[in-house]
Length: 113
Image 1 (tube, one colour):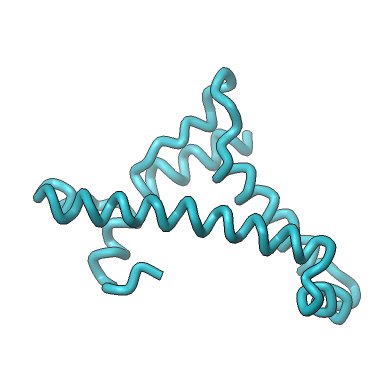
Image 2: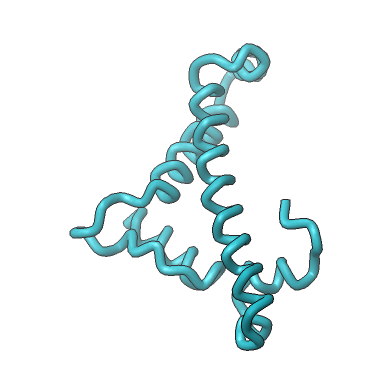
């Protein structure tokens, strides 16, 4: 179910097909990193003592080190997608008319970060 949800979100929001739903395809690095980062963020939010995760974040250890790594992976993959979309938008006029979330966001801002 997780793979299906992630696949649908990517398809409609970014107009990319990560093919997570096809069981014969290998796991997507983006999907895996996004899933782990989500789980670690939920654990952080449910922590009884916020001071613990804040200290771990400061020292970059344990789950905070993993979270930082997974966020970096997601960020790199998304920046690649944005770069690819920017190239498409400069070379073709059909990309300018896309109605997906990524294209709309990119049309409204100049800084990709």
